[in-house]
Image (cartoon, rainbow, N blue to C red; front, side, top):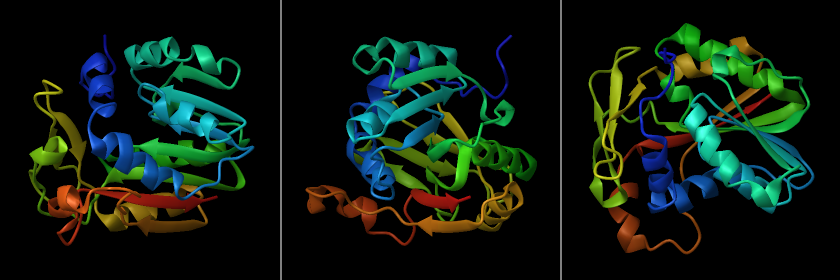
Length: 241
């Protein structure tokens, strides 16, 4: 029986999406890697998907990267793409709430993962698991649904549509990537205050929201509609142990 925490999308469709649309191939990696110098560092990517951020981390000078994902079929894809990185990049299956790290990693990357938490208890456990991987002073770099965005909207031009069903903790947020992915991806709303509290309870000493920035060389005309709004659909978070 599948674990209820497993995100219900097709792994092959998801891999095709994240390697196609600019919001994934350009905007996301820029807003993750601009926050951390990875040279000589140990990286853990929790919710690694097809492992692209792990491979990019090593290409940017990381000593080692471990990718962890709850979906075994995503781990299978990540492993199949890893022939050039054996010994420097490794993958394993696991749900974030079940993980216990060894406090040896410099940087933890989480992309679209904390927004899977359905309540404050689950979010806090996800943060505890994350901090357990980090050495003292280590940093979590997070790319996540933006809880300050209370409107959602039609971002078809950028590959998706975002629908909020409510603004109470636990209300579903529907991401529709059709036709690239033929099923909805469901996130859950938790307030900004709940995010900040979860990080503090989990043992992070610092927390900061990091608004998304456009990447170098981006076409301002193409991205105008995306950035010309009060709160973007996604946001960055930095947490330091």
